[in-house]
Every structure is written in structure tokens, then in C-alpha cells.
Length: 168
Image (cartoon, rainbow, N blue to C red; front, side):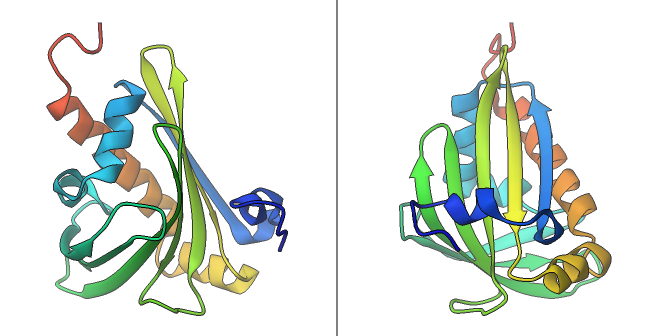
């Protein structure tokens, strides 16, 4: 991995270990970014369709962590852990995501928030430690569809909380 600066390994990663998902959300960048940064928002939309989230602890800052449980529609609970590795409001969030702190199979993600007229283009770029882990995430856990559904839920949630006239 490159040690030139934070986030560089994700940009330099081979495509066979990467998943990239993006969506244009009809809301200002600051509001979309806020929906990622406050637990009161995250708990309303995080995860694929049918999933809910219960937060154990949450500290949004460089080096902070989010411990949570995703509850699947079939009743299965998934313990999750995120460590925020870089936060540049309202443009970028980098994180490490695994089942628990120290997970050797944890993956790295960089989320970018770019203005697109009055809307915001959100891109999630995720890099796995190995191609096999990426393939498992895609095939077994439906990571691409789940990521698309998660951004769809974010778009719906942000449209509900956007101030009147914000899209004009």
C-alpha cells in the first residue's frame, strides 16, 4: 500500500478488489453529508432495504468509531464496526469497516460528495484486502445491490428532511 497520504491506497487499488457505487441525490451537499455524520440520521436510513440499525456507540471524528448491529429482514443480526479514518466536511469521508475492531478482513471505503447542480453526487469506493473477499461480498452478501439500496434509502430520507424549497 502507498504511504504517501491518507486515502491513497483506495485510489491506487486494483479494480479486482474494488466496488464503486454512485448516485445523484436531489439535495444540497451539506445536507447529504450531514445525513452521514449524525447518528440520529444514520439510524433512519443505513443499510439495504428491509434492514434496520441499532447503534451501540458512535463518535464521528477522525479516529472515532461506530459500533452497531444491522438487523436483517429475516431476523439475522450482523455486528458491524466502522472507524472513521478521514473526515473533510462536506466533501469526503474515509473509513475502515469490519465486523469488529481489528477485523483482518475489514475493508476501506471512501465516500465523496460532489455538487451536481442543486443536487449531490455521492460515490462510495470500497476496496477489499483481497479479490476473494470482494467476490464473497458481491456474491454472498450482494454488496453491489445492497450499496445501491442503501444510497436509495439515503436519497429518500434526505428528501423527507430537506427544508421546503431546498430543491428549487
